[in-house]
Length: 429
Image 1 (cartoon, rainbow, N blue to C red):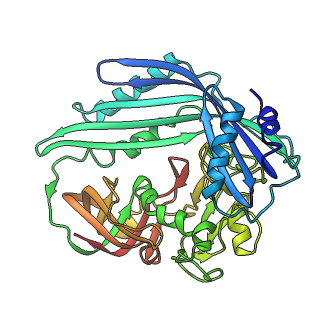
Image 2 (cartoon, rainbow, N blue to C red):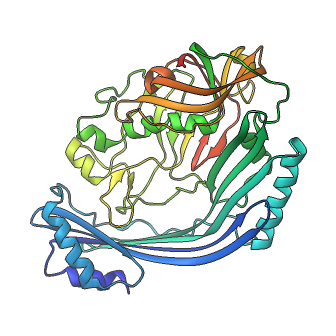
Image 3 (cartoon, helix red, strand yellow):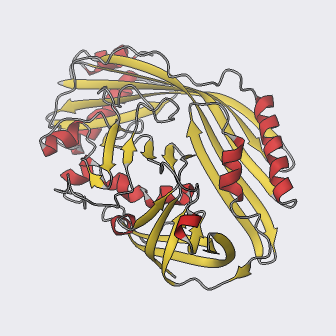
């Protein structure tokens, strides 16, 4: 099966058509306290997007593909799809070399040794701690061509790592999780330990009350959940729908002046890095907020057409789904000096190391309600106690306007690069 075969099948039923192909080759290792399970596999999928009678339709399939079945499914999608509004691009992106990382040396044995060493180091911190993990690595290839003459492809290697530590305590089991994706080799072990074991290893902590308006330090993992509303707010799709709280706010101070937030689709080690987006438009690094000032929205072809502007090369979509503007590798600039975790600069407050759930909020408006489970109270920069069942609520943009300190080091969380951050006057209950 080739993309050109699918395009041939579209010639008599569509004015414009676009084919995308995805190939994923991977190896994996599941690691637990008593056993390890290795695996490998390959997945190949094709997606089709076409314009028919002024409407845009999409479909996609994994595995064995019948071009005419794929075309029939897309025709059905066109019947209720959105108005097209744009033309597919004609110019092909420049040829790119593979976006390879340092994965050739990784084998199931090296991953197993890495995780065993990580388990040993965790148990030196706390002898009863138990590590479970899943590491998947391999090569992803992407190709696109359309009936207007565009054709492009690239491949990249990625590592996806998920870690979880379970620790028995006097009040029950305590669990900490951390996940990250990168084009590099295995994650830096000290970074993984920082995220998993902070501050599990603190002894002699008392349960203290935490309610009211507090200074709150978010770990990078917790900060990542807070930024989900920002990722939604900068989407041109939300702007076109009249639902973005950032509408007509370009050039205005929205969040604290200590925060500069960037979208980096060209980041060398980024798992979401790509030379062009899912519509074949070349990507470029973009500043979303410069010292707290909103710089502008992310657009794909359709949202750009609706808003009277140009695509920013930010289209993303799952196979068989409509495109939408997306963030890739989101990065928040670290402070040039100061502590890593901002506890010393904050003085007293609570430290949030993770989020159990984020129900009850609204990403479009920026409102949030975060169930943080266990949080840690600190005074004079030192952890003094903990509180279980903590819930934070408010508006993301209001919260980020109250930033008092940013950590001096970035950690990778998912595909993002984030520091610790300290915010004041956050509602805690």
